[in-house]
Length: 226
Image (cartoon, rainbow, N blue to C red; front, top):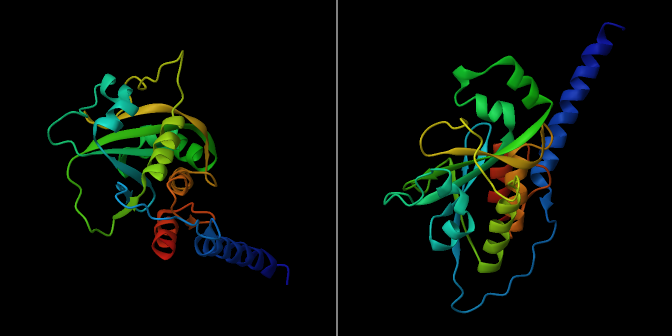
């Protein structure tokens, strides 16, 4: 009997994890949809949620408003005014793992351990051209002007200024189009990149799952409730 106890405990833990993940996906947040009255002639804004097997980003259109809202991106050298630039892409994550792991072949033990435990956070900002829709890795949503302003404010407030300025982390980038910036909050396995994306989307008036630690959980809940 004693030999079976560790197996039972492991199975119970796995079952608990599966049920927690399922509940986090299937229970909507907010539970009831907010009442939204349509306004004739109201300008809608299209945003995108980009996903891969472990991470999600939010893409917002490049226009006069967004360039004015995030002037430090151009100041950091990002090609935001390039004729082919169409989208600003933002993601939040753990400092060590995010910066030091541009591809799986770059995976190292220390960033992985920090990514599974706790680490300081960063914002990754990138510039993208045309993004093909529809796609299994791209979900688009139309949101109103108030929701769009709340989304922009949430993203802007996620950056951590130093001496009143927001500056890119020196030497931290995957290529010429992107930069990393210090961010607010601590990253952990429970409060990670996808929970940040989910919170940002709720600010934009969308409904997510109650807890979305994985991209598949977030994208599933978005398709269910929006």
